[in-house]
Length: 294
View 1 (spheres, rainbow, N blue to C red):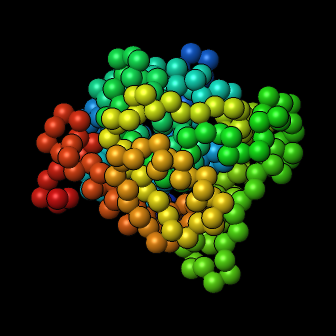
View 2: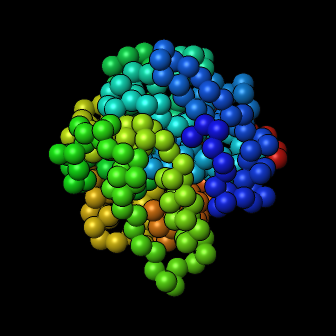
C-alpha cells in the first residue's frame, strides 16, 4: 500500500489525528518488507498487534488504534508482506517481533487476520516467541469455508482486475445506518489500492487448504467478538471459532456488520479493554494506566 493516494473514505478529522500520532514504518525482514502503524507509549514491550482482513489495509483499524492509544495502550497494525503461505508469514513475523524487541504480544485479528493469529499462536508455542492472548472477530478455523482451493495455486498468475473480481463483499441492507454503510465503502476502496502481488498473496493465504490445530490453543486466553447482524452463511462460517474454543470468553455486538471496529468502534474498544484488564499491573500489560485513562 506504499505511496498510494489516501482513500476518500478516510478523509476525516479522526483519520487525520491518527496519521499525525501514529508512526508509519517500513521494516525489512530478509527479503520481505513489513508496513506498519505503531501508536501509543513506546516503552511498552508487550503491545497489541492487529492483523487485518484479507482485502483491507492496516489502517482499517484506525479508529481502534486512536481510541486505545488515547487510553494508554500501545497498539500496532501491520500489512502482510508478500508471502504466499501462512507459515511463511509466521516465520517472518517471529523475526519482526524480535527486531522490534518485544517481550511478548497480544494479537487481534479479523477474518484472515484472525486465522493467521491462531496459526501464529500455534507456531509461537513451539518457539520462544510469547503470545499472551488473542482477540478474534468474524474469523474461522478452516479455509475450506472458501470456494477457491482449486484456483489458489494460480493466484500469482491472475491479472489484478481478475483478482478484484474474485472478491465478493456482503450487501448492506438499505435501512442500515450510515456507519455500517461507510465501513463497507472504506473496505471496498482499500481493495482497489493493492498491487497485483499484494492482493494475490493475500488471496492465496486465504484460499489455500489449511486449518487450525487446537493442541496449544485450547488453553489460550481468547476473546471472541461476535456480531449479530451477519447473514446466516457468514454466521455459520465464523461459528467454527466458537466450536473450537468452548472456554473462550464471548462478547456480543447486536449490530456492526463485517467491520464492527469501524462501525461500532466505542463498543468494540470497550470489549478489548475488558479482555486486557487481567494483564494490568503485570509485565504483559499492553497499557500504561494512570488517572487519565483508568
